[in-house]
Amino acid sequence: MLIAAEGGGGAGSFTPLLMIALLFAVMYFMMIRPQQKRRREAEQMQSGLGPGDEVVTIGGLYGTVTGVDDETVLLEVAPGVQTRYARPAIARVVKRAEQEEEATPAPSTAEGAEVVKE
Image 1 (spheres, one colour):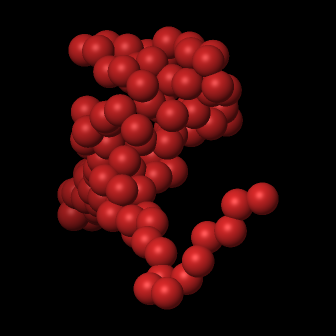
Image 2 (image 1 turned 180 degrees about the horizontal axis):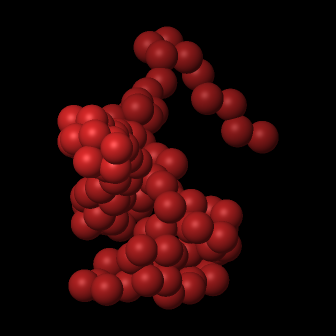
């Protein structure tokens, strides 16, 4: 009777291994791949930092990039106040320097308009 019980369980022993493999596959596609993608995007954003970019640090401090080194970024957080941060401490870029220059039109005066100085 013991022999009959062992013979019937042969096909069922493959199912738990398949379920474990399926669980690891789901974990990989739901957790690991998106995390790797976010890390690559963050590294790309941090490597593309340049002077004039407005950024936010991981601590929530807003500042403007004034200098960039291999491992550090120099931020101006107030007029005349500069602080140095590690590149990974930059959470996101609020505004790129190139966008700011393109968005602001050159000042112009309308023809026929007279400027009055008192």
